[in-house]
Figure 1 (tube, rainbow over the protein chains, first blue to last red):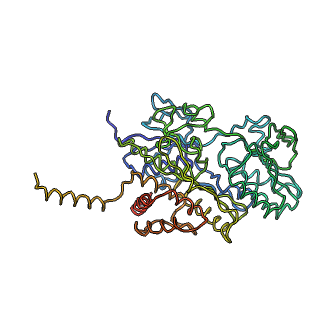
Figure 2 (cartoon, rainbow over the protein chains, first blue to last red; figure 1 turned 135 degrees about the horizontal axis):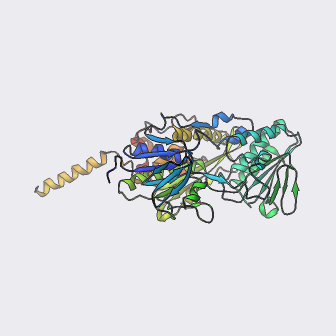
Length: 398
Length: 100
C-alpha cells in the first residue's frame, strides 16, 4: 500500500495535551499527516479561571482559538468524535464521517460525572455550579458570589481524588476569600472535602490563617466532610451527620476520562486510561495513545502543565515509532501554581523518570514553596504563574 | 583498504564531526528539553526566555542554579538532572528551531 505521507496521526481533543501534540508532531515531522479533531471552535482555559470567579480577570482572557496560522500543516477538523473502531483504525464523527489513522491519540480531558453525586445533575449545576469547565459556569459562580449577602456562606464540595487540578478547589477558596475580604466582610467559606489531605495543604492553611483569619474552614472526609447528597433547588448539601444551607454552593463532581476514551476501550474500571509511560500507548488497545487528564500517569497530577509536557514527549515517541525507531524513556516534570491572593502564589513541583513503563517521582526535584517564605517570593511566584500561562497557551494554540 | 594510521585519522575526524553536528531532535535529551518550554516562553516577565542563548552559557547557568539556594520551582526541578543531562538539555535548547 502506498502512502503519500509518512503516516497518519490523528488526535482527538484540542486542549493542552491534544493541541500541543498536534503542533509539536507536525513541526518535528512535516511529512507526517496530522489531523486534530476538536468539537469546539475555541477553547476556554481552566487555569487562572479562579481569578475570573474572584473578579480579578475576564473570561475572554481565557479564550483561545485554532487559527490556521498557529496550526499550519495540521488538518483541524471541527467535529465531535463519537466512536473509535480500534480494529479498523478509524474514528467516527457525529456527522457520520470517518477518519482513518495509523496511530491515534486520545486527549479528551475529563468528563464530569454529573449524575454520580445523588441529587446533582446538569440541571443542578444551574443552581450549584461546578465551574470545573471554564465558560458559562465560571460566570455563574462569579455572579452568585457577587450577589450573596455580606454574611453569606459559600460551600465548596470536593470529590474523592483523582480529579482534574488537585490544588484547584483550595485556590478557589483562597481567591473567593480575598474577594470576600473586600466585598463581603462577614462571609465564610467552608470546604467539604471527600479527601483527608490536599496538595500544598500546609501552605494553603497557613495562608488562610494569616490572610483571612477564620474565614476559610476545611473539613476532611474522615471528619464528616464528605458530601453524600445535594438538593440544588433547595440549596442544601448533606453529609453523614450534617445539613448545610449555604448562599453559594460550588459542587465539584467526581470525574473520569472523557467519553471517547471509554468508547475506544482504553479506559479501565477506575474510569481512567492506563498507559505505558514511555510512549503513552494504551495498555488496553494497540495504536491508541492517551495523554493529559484522561491518562493514568500518577504520581504526575492531572494538570495543564503535565498535559503539555506529556504531549511533547509523546509526540517525540510517536515520530520515533513512525520512523521505526525505539522510543526512549525520559524525565518529565510538572509545576502547579496556586494563588493565595491576587498577586501572591505558591507552587508545587515534581520530576519523574519513565523507565520501566511507570512514572517514578524524583524526590530531590519534588516539593513545594517553603512555609517560611522569604520576602517577595509569593509575589514572584505569582509572576511566574502568569508567565507560565502565557508560555503554555502560546505553545498549545500558537 | 586504507592503511591503519589513515584509518585512525579518519575515525578521529568523524568523531569530532559528530560532536559538531546538531543534537538529535528525537533523542533522549530532546525529550527532556521539550518540557522546558511549558514555562519558558519568549515573552516572560520573570521567567527567562531560553531562546538564542548558546549551549555553553545555558549549561553554566543550569549548573549554577542547581548549586544555589533558592526557593522557586526551578530551583527544585533542576535537581532532577545530572551533569550529563544538563549538558544534553543545554545543547538541545540551543539548537532548537522555534515551533511555528
